[in-house]
Image (cartoon, rainbow, N blue to C red; front, top):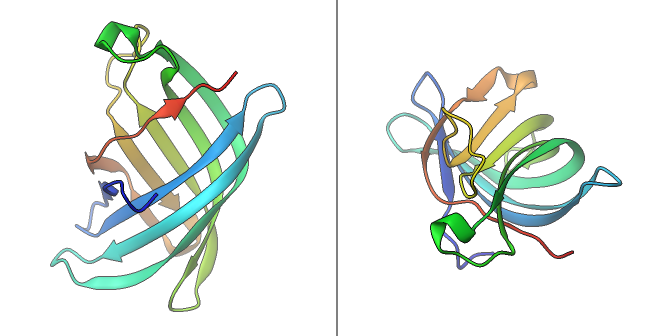
Length: 142
């Protein structure tokens, strides 16, 4: 949703990835839909590429519980998801990648969990493996 701020992760070389998007995941069928946009910047903040991402496969989800311990609605959910996504850049390059999304709400947040995203693009040896800023949220619908 363009009204939200991007969630940002950084790679060891200083490159950043800004990610925005939304979707739906279903635990019982282990399915996922959704997608969004990304902006890849170098360590100086210059845009290297923009593009889209599309969810392909839910690799796993672990709930941290609902948002009530933080004073939020009970349908707000915290958790850790791993999703295989397909990215397509404005430069024409495309690849599958692994998107990790952590929302630190709930009463079962493991030590070391950090709010945000990480993105591993193996084909191009890009590992945005440290959360920088931004908020994520799961909303339970059933």
